[in-house]
Amino acid sequence: GTPDEVVYDQDKVFVSDENKGDIILTDKFRAYTREMDFSLHFCRKADPQSKGKVENVVKYVKQNFLYNRIYYNIETLNDDALGWLGRTANALPHSFTKKVPFTEWNLELPFLKPYKAHIQKVSAVSYSVRKDNTISYKSNLYSLPLGTYKGRGCTVAVYIEQGYLTIFAPDGIEELCKHQITSGQGIKIINTDHKRDKALVINEMIENISALLEDPELGKQWMATIRIAKPRYIRDQLLLTKQVIEKTTNPAIVTKAICYCIENKITSANDLKAIVTKYGQEEQEKDTVKIIQLNPLGGTLPIGATTKPDQSQIDDYKAILENKQKL
Image (cartoon, rainbow, N blue to C red):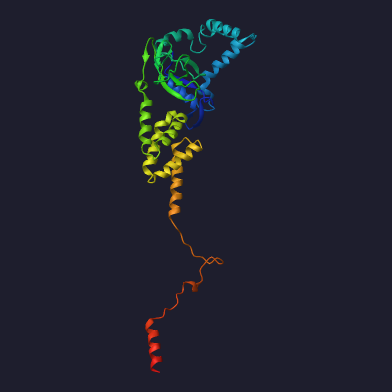
């Protein structure tokens, strides 16, 4: 069984730091304690009085059981330890309390909480996929996304960790789903989302987005490559692609960017967005004509270059001609 409280020494396996009673647990030990149903009590640092009971047990084992004992192998040592516990450690009265440990344990047993095993993730185990898109684990059936079963011999990789089944594609990279392990037998655990044919929804999205382009077939070709490269994020990729198309005023720029992505095997809507932005900036620079007048030698215009000459009036010439005629 499990007690209400467990006393620990401040070992580096459990504690990463301590500051005046504020104890920071290591990541793995914190994950373990969250799963187990007991409270924690840590002994003070460098204080043998607070942890003497635990250390005295270690000393008792060393000096009473292991002292002068010949080691043959671990199996023999374990058998000897069980015999020593039965006739000495758990059977004789304690020198200070005068109580027999085995008797005390029987008295405390009804108050202990049920023991819950801590399940650590081990190497992936290959499970066969049934025709109904489920796997069988300990006589229970767990659902898989629609389309996981692809024929005879189809398998998935299963990790068991902290009471959950995490199911991956056979390569162990793409996560398909996650189920909490159920007690009992003959139970079918179904995730209702697994019954939906998401492929139809994605096909419809691709058709609608392609219709916004100058060349729909070109858009379908590129989005198909994204679907293969990023199947888990295809919906997010398509939504971002639609956003880029709708915000770009010049459709030719989007077409040019998609052609560039296909030629360079780019399968990311974020990259498409960056390419469209770059092409858009280049188009703006072409439309803006800048006339810069500079002295080729000094880089600036001389003062006289901006001076305009006086313009003669036609009346001045008429007056001059009239004076000549009078003379």
